[in-house]
Image (tube, rainbow, N blue to C red):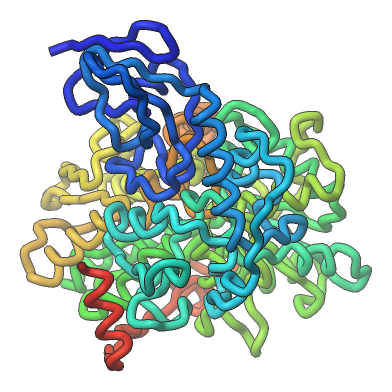
Length: 601
């Protein structure tokens, strides 16, 4: 049943159980918030900034309430701009700042901070209260290779806890202590790097301030660029080209691939290449591995291996199913290996002078690059990983406006081209679709009748399909899962022996790399933009002259000249890996037990 009320004197209609904030947003009445996001349900109501003044029907008095958790009522009059509201909002922001680290100039979120935005909105020109002895006691945790926790900047909005617990199901973050000592901590009082955290970075996407951030490696990259003895080799992932433009006020999904090549050359990069090339390489290795497992009675179902958040999750939670994961390295790590062997050989460069820099949509890629499995003679195959956000900041600090750059093309004849199949690696279902295009060709000798395999596309958290390979070969049953909550569902199925599938793609982040933890963040919505980015990748696929990995002529060349054939001995040395059991044993202290009890109460 539709009901009516007014906001700022204008009539509005609403349904039962709608909040003042929800109705106000729908009708274009701005109310500031710090704990609410459009696509996160059940706002915790912790920031107390979304204040409005209301007058209920039949009541002459006025009352100031929080808009996010106060239901609209028939006949209610809501005012968002009154002296009482402004005064209380200003006081609330002052109190939030009082025990907040105000060293904003060196904060990673400076200029893109929601707390700064709200302080400006309420007209705060000077903060009367400042209690540094409170925030200086809070935790700074840089134990993770991917994420830095600085609780001196935390405003306790609880968005990170909600995403980690309810969206990802990882539940690595908990609330500890009380009052001014309240802190977002890591479960079991562990350093983040030793915890159940898988470095997916979804918590960073929702943090309104700089309390949770990617580990910033831009200074290292600048050092490489400024060293004349260093040969810098850049690679960037498929998801970067359709997301980076958002950081330069371009519409979500704008393809800036050519501008990225130009920007990297302006920065002084020696070699600029595309991770899409090694995505094609991964399809050749992974597809061959799948067919051999099927033919030889190997461990099935086989999981994809390109997502490091998924690998971390499995090693920490389901080590029993590690033999089910493809041994093929991710495209990032295959690129690093090929750059310091094949590319160095073809270009006549001493690999010891090479520094491979990856630009990735993913915070977990930072951790992946530091795995001991991906080192040769003590040197990493990939030296540094920058997220999309870090790369945007690097361009800004170097005075490069991406939107104003002309496009350039890759100028390397060995690893400079890719197929449409590689482009869709960046979205949920893309790895599966790319693999099926090649597997179908290998088994049947013919290409898929419809190259766009719609059955694995879409946004459902778990999707499944059956591929008829004919030629007397049993149908191939496949599944696709995105988000760690969905990953847990399929992992439990495989662990119990109930899986009917042969091949399963898993990506840790909602939407896959499109919604990766290193992508541009929105102040209005948690998962903003990734569906437009996804559509843009499908467009790139349709526009490519070659749309299957096995038809990329440079892939044929690298096997003929260097690797031999897919899954050869050399290919195994350079393009495959192993995994390890990292499930931790919990040893509770009394303090940790009480913290656990309090967190659950």
